[in-house]
Image: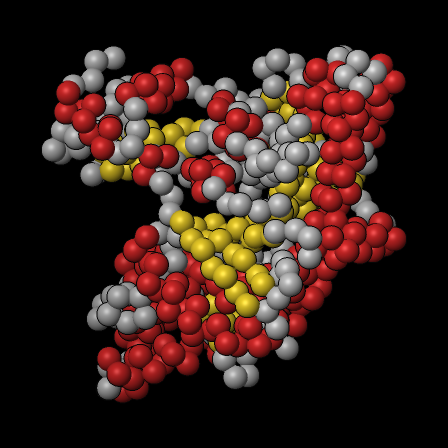
Length: 509
């Protein structure tokens, strides 16, 4: 495919290379192969279920070693809150109070979510602020008819003239209402990190968000800093980064040609959370905890949550110690057959690995990798990825977190395996990113490039193809040493829609 001089200049200005773009276009043309599921990972078949004694031992091991380690909590937080309010946007777009009474509109439309939102108004953390803003914008508000009042209330919540929550990052939306204050998801992440990630009174967190919101996050931190430091008795050190432009991917037409906008320029798109591997790769720490911005608990549940973080961290340290011991033994005895037997036994029994090495050289390659311990909760039918045994193109079978978008949904056998999944991925990870000699791994070396996916989007009124990189905890970590550990469902409390904030797990008793 021939690119023009203008194309090449644009590609270079974007931080990309001509070879990368041509490779992406080839992926559109050839398609991305589906992941081959072998079976669902279940308890005793890929998922560890720790008993109470084992949990106590792991937590104790973590606490014993915590002050010797550098620990960072990594939170992808660039997502806008727009999807949280999708059903409210639909109401604003379709309801006209001058033409229809509100009760008639509710009767004629699928408004269950809207009605639940309106009924739940007294419980939301932002309602007091919302009502204050309405009084300021609309002094005659209380004299309007019900339909107009409802429409103005929703618009004030969403639009920039009001609170502008639709365009805020999700992390800056008030989630929880306490007696003396409200707390955003950002503040709750600080609070919980203080209970398990602090080292000698210092707590380090790294957030990724859109560059345009740097000042907003900084202001929020200054606002809550004294409160969270008083509650946790530690100092917070916040760093942040942005999804790099150089991780964007080119968009294509439906015939797999480069898509050009109205000005004939190439169109590039952010490539999903897999692009954050570059950001993660720059974090310097012994242990990195990863958790999504919208998955938080209220203050009264934070110690329970912290305990399970310590358990996951302790499990990682336990396995890492064994791995490092084996690797050091290989340095001393590079041709020991009995050592190979010990390694095979460790891989099969401790890591549940099905494909075992035939030589010590293969064994070293399998052992000398980043480690991740992933919490898994029982499947409740929530959308998202899950733990599976997967066969790669070389025939090796390994544990992977797989999204439904990676599976051939037209294949009855593959969908039968999906239906047998007992657990769900809540994005609850702890990662060991240094090798047995204390050197940081280059995380970009452990990616499966064939695990991204292609989707259809719209741009300037035209349908285009978009390419997402292998997900951060999916294909981007495909060649890591992986352990799945069951954690309680109570540790998973995502806020996908604003109505989720009315669930018991987000209400302060």
